[in-house]
Image (cartoon, rainbow, N blue to C red):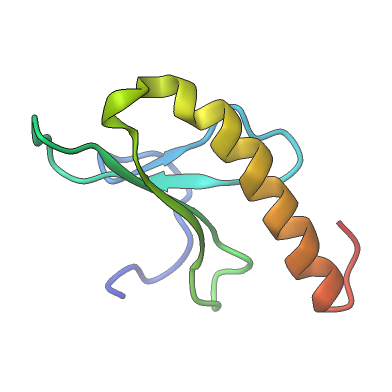
Amino acid sequence: MDLPARPVEESPTFKRVRQARRHELWRVAHPFDPEVAVRIICRFPADDHAVLALIGFDKKTIGDVFYASAATHGEALVDAWLRQQGGTP
């Protein structure tokens, strides 16, 4: 809610999902907690649009392997959303 526009560079809170190839996806991180590693994968359709949250998951048990499946799943959700909006994936 406090973000004035889509991120243009990575920060401790927002990092690009490098495994995503077709759409720019970002992961939202939280401060380190040894008990949980929640990640929310999101897309910023435009500077003046709200964040479209795609996936939330506690990746603590599987680590960074999570991002490969999150990118695939997230891009499929973006494609479906674009089709619904009348755009092309």
